[in-house]
Image (tube, one colour):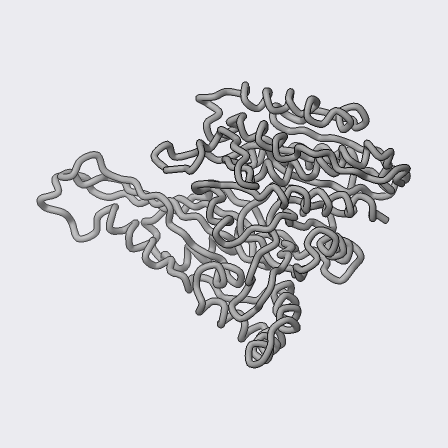
Length: 446
């Protein structure tokens, strides 16, 4: 309950800027060490004193932070997630402001991590700090789960999830990054939408390796190791896996049809009513639309050879797959094996995680998130969708019944392109809206 009106503290933009100035690049851990991560963790009590005075905090591994805010009941808790590591910066890229300067200018906070994921982390902490200042206690326990290596496979979040499961803590709702408030979510659909991820594709990395006769390139055999691997990669085209429309996407199309007009409304309603047709339609569109409805295959690395005039005795290709909901790692590997159809090509699983189930969209948990969107972004239509990138939330879906992926910040297509790219930034006004979303969520917990 709240004992006094909530007055948000000013200065969220500067607090975010201070976090951005700390280069917590998890992929550069060997060069930088743990010092930047420890510096950020040590800064948090200064920025959020009430959070650290009232919540229990423990370190889970070197990079995991788990806070517990004790509620008024022993009902299953809420888990709010974020990560404080960021991806590297290419020094040759021309940023408007240096990526780790944390510049606040013209109503924006600029820098690596502004959107992914220090901005979303800050709006969680801002909401908790503001509610504590008003004497608020949540209806049930709230855990804050912050990982420091999400961008490099998320071992900290996995350890946090295991810790809670071992303690028999089964969350009522888990919320992590993933979706956002977007403009024009589909062609011919006007307005903005709050895209709430209710499922997450699995991740599978395979290494295809072939051996052959080495020797001088002047007299190559018919089939070399390189040619064999290249042929295998070529056989793994876009149609390797069938297209299927998840339940959440059919529901999304129905919601969007209510906002569309004329022929667009008719088309969206027809697609929502016929999942096989919508699957083929999305697949034909290619790109992000196709990725929603099928397992994708992306060759990302090729290797082999030591000189331009020498036939390599071994060649390999690394292939990254994002597994559609309803499929499995084992089934995906078997389909790849059948499609490659070459016993001389070894297929090795480098890493693999199963896709999540779809979380409910017709119960009080999704309805609560939708209501909070109405507080923070009243013009946005809450809609379920499938998250295609891997998030730390994947470590919870094995035992938590409702896992969602949504950062309550407006991100246009242009802004989304800056994530892992150049000129990443967040609008200062969006930090306020994100804080309102999380404050509403905490206040309205049943």
